[in-house]
Image: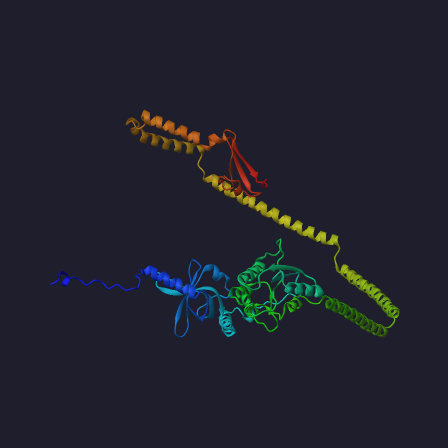
Length: 501
């Protein structure tokens, strides 16, 4: 039995080379890139995602297949359209693989809409969406100024559009024009147009660059793809938000872009925009002259009408001198009657006065009568005063009769003093009036004398009292003419208060 009966069979080696995963993957990558170096693929964009790096990753699909799509940041910025979900496009690029995931993908170099119908559908969807936001509402439209001093124009500086606008403004009414040069088609055109509109709107009145009173966004005719920058959403929003009245003049009369809906007014051509911006100066001159002639003619007719009315009224009035003569005569007659009435009134008043004087008694008679009455009153007062004196004297005599003699009064007082002395002797013997009590009493007497007002008035002061003897300590309590009593250390004096100073 041979030795290798139970040994493993040796592998059968064929002529197929052995490859690693990387070799196979990169071999397939080279094959695809060489075979499909440039292709055009039509499909619908799906899962569109713009990475933070600026690159776009998406899928391009149709009814039966799906292809991964990559658009690098630099290429994406140069595209003439903005990739959106559900947009049918034609992508031009090259096929390659991503070996780490074993899938193939299309590197996009350019992108265009798949036919004009798809482009129009995209624009119509965008128009409806922006209209739903209220960007095209009629209430947002601003009236154009009648004669703007400064006009801002957003267009290409090298095209025929700016020349047509300037030429038309020169023919109609020359105005100061500010040109903001922009690209009107191709990559970056939409961003420049939106920035120009916002730039004009941000100018401050009275600044070094004058703020336009009117803005014109203009471009000549072209294909639908050429006019796409004016359908860009950023441009439409900038036009709708502009606070300056704006005219859109893009393309020919049959061309319609989305900024035509957002602008305050749409002009069919750039030349028509210039015509809408300013009136014709010659027509204004003619209108001013015509209005002047009509005004002068109306003033003349008014003056003539008033003159005729004045003449007719003057005829009916008559001669003013005759009217004045009549009035003068009437005034003379009235003055004569007034003088006679005045004299008559004076005579009547004199007669009344004389009758009243005749009824009055003579003044001496009245004085004699009054003097007689006064004498009678004086006699009655003298008699009454004499009776009052007699009455007072009788009362005084009666009171004097009841008074005790002075010697009796002194004896009575002495007896009472002796009685009280006898009563106080026991207290004196008991030491009631001791030396300490005596000193305390002497001290109290001295304090009483030092605090007594009599001690104060002895130094030149006085105490003011009223009629009732009440001290008056404040000048506000004294009234003018009040009777006062001034108490000095040696007596009292009566006084009358005067007016305060």
